[in-house]
Image (spheres, rainbow, N blue to C red):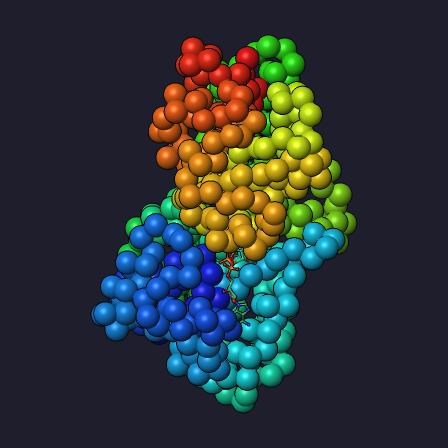
Length: 430
Ligand code: NAD
């Protein structure tokens, strides 16, 4: 198939590279000329395991190309995936202006039949808006379908997730669109669910909100455990063994972040409100998430006494391991709260420091974990990168000014930390 993927971000690039690997002819489009220039050389602008190799392989096979010229790409393609950002507005609503810009450009190029597919996460009824714009400016003889194919990949394992999805959701309005998309996804051998367009749009928001709810739920449980002297890890294991609950997404921590959960939750709350429903449950999920970061800062305060003029070492900045994505990372809010109280911050992250420098200022960025520890009054774990799990703790203890570790990801065993002589604080464990 001849496919255009608009937006060369985490979703667009991974989708484009994977569609090319399945033998399709893919044109990836982005307005960011710098990204396009680097992609043409086979250099990925984002860190995502396996992605760069896949891009290079498909460049060599002639199956993938990159351009900033959306009009030509649209003209040359039969299926156009929209994978641009849908960031939150100040009121939480999804900003759909990037999607609209793309649709208005495509509308001018409609000729014959084209299938326009929403891959970006958008609020329900966006498909109707897209169809209206396309219809208003389609030339005579042109026809089109709009479909929704929400993406469920996770950063850090995006290529694997794309190629092995739990399910593929296809929200379609015609048999023709259903056939094209079913043919495209058939090689993945994943369950395919055909729905109407609006239901597909809601499936994405509902899924992310549900997962965010699970995280906030276990975070709330961690507070109760801590107050009662119970162990949240044991509670989560006990809950997760129940097949109706499942063990995934029951890891307590410093709250969820990233470009999906916070914004999708906010957008789902707003669209529900517009449709006349006050989604109080999801508002509580948001509130618990915000409070979790404040609880963590309070923990630091209790451990070091006065935060003012202390040097605080931070391991991990990205919102989760195996990605360089800093968007809405909890580290940003936690560090801001510490700096507001006069702390000096030293930090290290294996892959996110370049991006962190754009949002986190006045930080001493270190070359490795041990440099962070040297002379710090305490050490925080904010992202559970594997290399932090394997760190030489005896060396860490020697380098720290005080042997205090406050672990926001429950990476270490409390018994072992005690044996090693640390004052160790984690989430919801005695
Ligand atoms: P991103 O910010 O990494 O990438 C978006 C890209 O779109 C950018 O490179 C930007 O330059 C480009 N762009 C913006 N306007 C454009 C235009 N008019 N023409 C061409 N390119 C344009 O975003 P992302 O993380 O890939 O997310 C994209 C969408 O997918 C969002 O709706 C997001 O919610 C959704 N999503 C993201 C993830 C994830 O893990 N990141 C997972 C599932 C779904």
